[in-house]
Image 1 (cartoon, one colour):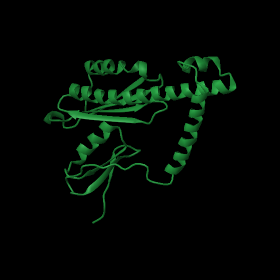
Image 2: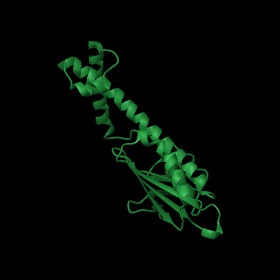
Image 3: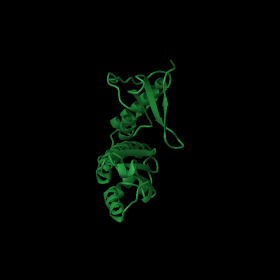
Image 4: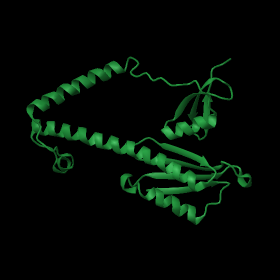
Length: 216
């Protein structure tokens, strides 16, 4: 795991750096060695103070999409604690996906092993099913695969999910960015408090954020 520190109008102390490294160390056994984490610390208002101690994490995990997390409070240690909690939630999601994926692979290997009678020893040992897969289960898996494929083909041509949101309350663009980062998404739909319009805010590839609003 490689960690890079960046600052904007913020003098990073050895104590802050060690605090962050200790917080991130507990995730090391869950993250691939090639994981890259960029930490940006910023003191927005400087001597004026206020809710301006900001931390931004950009995490590049091999095989996963980029994760961007951000938090801002009046104390840098509080900001670090909150953003680490957000990171922990993201890691739990990734762990859940990994466990589910391994479970599916175990089922497939059990089915394939029953049909061809052989799978590579190392691969089989890693994903070996807990019990032999019966002929009935093999048939069920085959039918399930055909059903999934048929459903996937249907999904390509229509709306597959509809989601409803409560947009009765307006929020600021800053609050929308915080919500988007907390969810780990690349865009967020909200009612803009400044314009009273429904707005999409999104993360730009070159850095920063952009908005999309309807014309008058």
